[in-house]
Length: 354
Ligand code: DP6
View 1 (cartoon, rainbow, N blue to C red):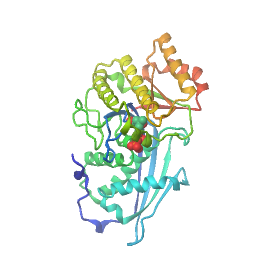
View 2 (cartoon, protein in one colour):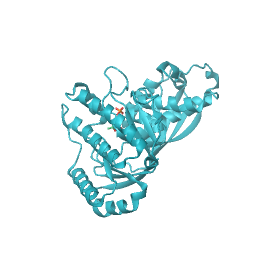
View 3 (cartoon, protein in one colour):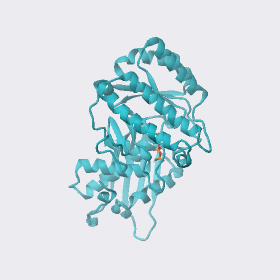
View 4 (cartoon, rainbow, N blue to C red):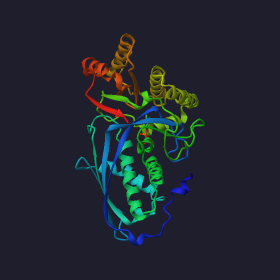
């Protein structure tokens, strides 16, 4: 599907009225990371990425829309956990500006956005994925009220398309399970405009994965991911990174099929360290890891070697660590985490990779 397929083409604006919609959307953890955007394009990734949606880590957004007086400027208010947040407004206005092209009915409304996360507010867990996707789903709910013929598959596709314009990784949060965004030659239907559910066979072991998130740093990131993406444009290793990510995707497809957990684990660890290597070698350079991140990684390696348990890590654009393991091994692993790793973290968040 091309972008123009997402234009709202009906001219039935006479039925536009005030209303409220509420939607929930999950955060996600990427196995192969989206890093870098194509130059002079809006939110088109350099490489394809794949993530698990996280069941316990989600945002609920209520969007209240009311008819706007003609000629008056659009008003948007945003409340996060009951508190008005004016500092979120530039990002939200930019988002509405980008999507107004595809959702012409939005021009009739003023908005109040009320949003809450299940995960702690200052946990350093990326909330842009779940919050932008929840907002995109709310907007699609308005569209559905205007166009009752709208099909579920299109609803989700367009929600993903809109979410991408708010935050790239948000477009993967529309679906549960494993989700792919960005064109890859080996994945049928994959494309740069919206995400798709992973279309191939998955071994049962990958349908029951637990994610223990170790919150090591609660501070907002010093280098935001949007800035980090830009640094890839003049990065000396950008070409190699692209090749590496593409190769990892090919390998992951066969690993997911045959159910080789150690290979899976090694791949996601290597991939996340590659992401960190990119930020360390960009100009300006930066280090997301904190000393406690390193302690945890070494502890995980030692424990794995000695216990032979399938516990592996992945990292996002920050200091926090996601520990992924099969649910069958949860009892022993969780006990070890809470006795050995708790000292290195500010908080621990548990989630099922749905
Ligand atoms: C490291 O989606 O936050 O988490 O599109 O600028 O909003 P923007 O970036 P964002 O980047 C996420 C990067 C990542 C990897 C990933 O989730 O794939």
